[in-house]
Image (cartoon, rainbow, N blue to C red; front, top):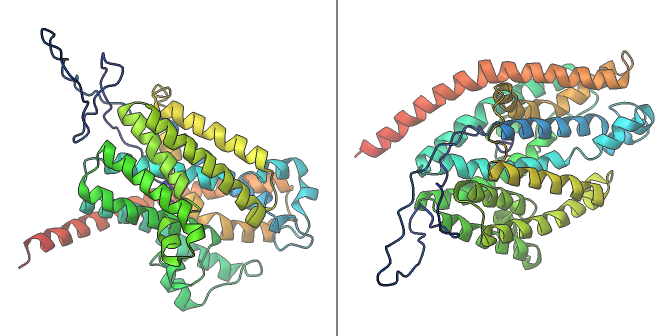
Length: 403
């Protein structure tokens, strides 16, 4: 999910230093309102923006979140802790209790993905139009996703017994990434997050089409947050579908963090982030009660809070000196790893569970999927994305000149 795992942070400009405590924002129409007393010189114009380095820290956080999710699916879910379960055959808490206690909190990696997605999507869209936004989403999401569907389906055919294989017609519909909207099951259960991502993209596309500014993004956060609060009690399915109350506040937190990164902190952005934290902790508790049933609310909120504080540090430039080149590679593995690890990985564990120590088996499966993820990125994502980009650019050029 790119921000889901997979969004590549790029070098972005940031606001230069100002002498005034409340600087004017560089992108119009936001403007500092000031009066100049007679006899006093007007304030100096803002200095030119400097270029910040690539945000390597976000690449590392994304991979950590993906590893959290993978560990959770292999050793921390309620399903894996049931007697005679199809993954381990006995409760995983009996097999490796220490790993289980840690893995039960790994599902929070999904919420971390959503926050990072809000940050990175806003960053990558600044100064771009809707056509560029559409093309960037298609070439980033679909190549690895198409491979994941083919790979997972093949594994489930070769290693039956853990997951039910979908009918061919449903597998084919999964290629659109719109299966949830059509009431069709996912080839792999982790694809549910893509539906949240797509709805976020469609909403944010409206703002991109009008030209991103500080003011517009803030207004978008406020309007979307209000809709997300009203949707559950409105009993309007369409509003709930569009507002996405389960994930909206995580994306909003990411948007507010990017505005801090680009323009600097202020009370309004801290207010948006605080509201996102308050609403997010409630969603964490609801997910524990209704879905996960394996971890505690206090521990989940603590992990989420620490992550947000780390993201604040990233947004305010505290991690700019982190420039380890291997983090770029680590970030590129995140999206393929997320897409291919769950159904295929648990099917492999089912077949090998009696041949290795459980902890060694989990480590080996994760390592194997990391290697496969690199191969997918190198030999599927990059070449297919290039072909898609050239084809889509040609298609849009024809649209502009046709007729």
